[in-house]
Length: 141
Image (tube, rainbow, N blue to C red; front, side, top):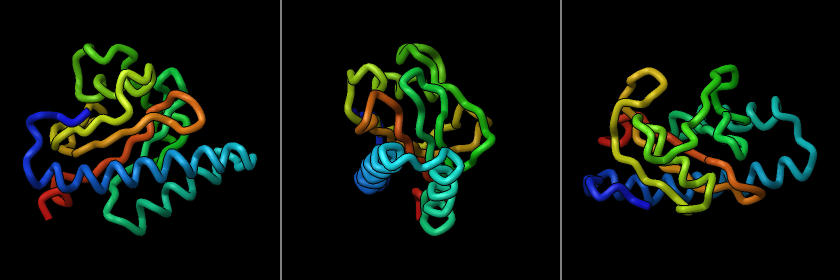
C-alpha cells in the first residue's frame, strides 16, 4: 500500500526499495531454512547496507519485534496496531497480511526522529515485517 502523498521522486525510490525488501525477505527465508545463525544473518544485512545506498534493514518476528537488522543491538518493536500513532504503526498491516507492502514517504522515524523513507513487505516464510530504509539525502539524490 503506497502512501498517497508520495512525491514523484519517492515513488521512483519506492519501486526499487520494494524490490530490495522482497530480496531481503527471500534471503531471510532461505537463511533461516539453512540454519544460518542470527549473527550471520545480521552480518550479511550489515554488509548489504555498507555496500549499497540502503541506510538500514529491519526484519521482525510475527509480533513486530526486531529479529534481524543491519544495526544489530538496536532493539525496536513495531506497534501491533496499524492505527496507533507514530511513523512505524502502518507497517503492522504486514503482520496480519492486510497489505503485502507499505511505501512510506520521507518523515521523522519513530526511533530517533531522523528523516527517513521506508518501504516494507511481509515475510516469505511467515508473517513478519521486512523493511528497508533510505536517508532523506539519498532519496533526493
